Image (cartoon, rainbow, N blue to C red; front, side):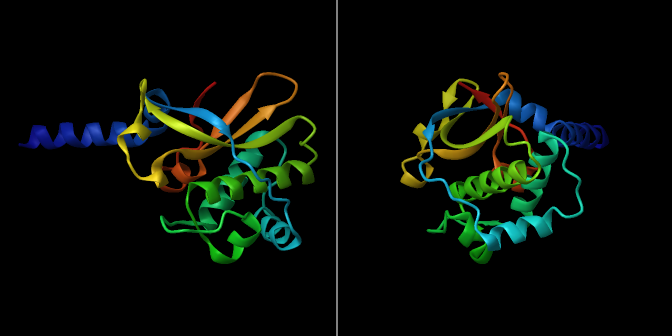
Length: 183
């Protein structure tokens, strides 16, 4: 019995320590199109982002992603009911599903890129996507229109092929910041 417990704890520790690595190697995100509707950052949202990022010196895209994830996950709570998708309204309502999370994160990234003069090299896009476990599209197993796709965000460098894919909803509950994106 003691040996089984030790093996169980070792497996659990392995999964916890390497959850991001395991997730990125088992699950991939495939875009089925861009999410329509960009939301310009209004003064109330800009003030909120400024206050959330005031203690961090942003020098790189990694800093932008880190601050945007922290701002998004600290502020929003997941809801399955009808919610706001406009990040300018989400600072007040605080409840969102994957569309709202992605829009809030994308707006925060866009604002931070602009304020820190990194927007000449990077663009931010919100994508509707399908999640695949290994090669299987998991959305075909759900009949609910709510689960027909999943929104995530792509940050792409305009000068080279570097792409950073982020699922802010996943990040809120698993601390996995980057996901695997397949074109």
